[in-house]
Length: 390
Image (cartoon, rainbow, N blue to C red; front, top):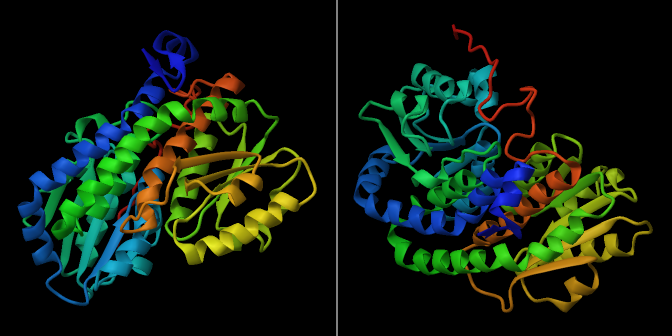
């Protein structure tokens, strides 16, 4: 059996079998996540009806690392469709400065995103919220039924939504756990649109199965280039995707490839200084025609900039102008498909980033399943001491 272009025996020898398999499991995880939400629709609706009873309720999406980027990816979309203020605040920020973020007199729905639920900040954030906020509801999106976060949520104002079992990644890096929680975050606030979203998810999953084969050769070739820094660029919710993509490369290469992320517009304002002859720029293009104009302006600019930097453009549909201004080019589909929002591009886009991160680790001789055998960086964060708050 093959995964991302390697036999399972070869991947085992390379120390990348777990991660590669988990990347490939994602299209089915998306289908299963949809079914999970559908099966629990009535429970979720009853909980949200109570949690969002007050029109001034804040919705805070929180988590640490990739779990935080779940919220960063979906918050803009949710703000556009809900009548409530949706914020994304990392648990690592809340834990150190709770008084900046948690308001005693403001009704709050805290949504905790966590793969294992065992990171020290996960439960600490929930405890702080209970201590500070008078009217608090807490929804935990987690992949681990036995995690500390899931066990902590046991009051009438708590709800635990478990992701499919296969999303509880055993590898070092979050892959299926990230995309499952992104999807769940979208679906729980669109319960009346599940029939429409089912069409989206089936299409995205079918395309994902294809990408896991079709992108192999180009991404393997790209990983062989002389690159020591990678920049991911995305606009709107794609900026959260860009941040997660940059972290995947950084994690799986054990920091041997430096990474950063930005929007196409923001990158010009100083961060562009990172570009040299060994830089790979990866641009996530929007389907939104207005946003895409700005992205295309930047693509043409960076394509014409002198130097040996390389450009990979990832687009939702075939576009000859994009192709002609890129060194490498991936089109998810032949024609433009209408989704509820660009956020639905995230799922198929991220597969390419995850695959490239594994290929880069293989090139550098780093085991993707355990890129930090010294223990300096861990699958579940260690060494954090949670101090008593007032």
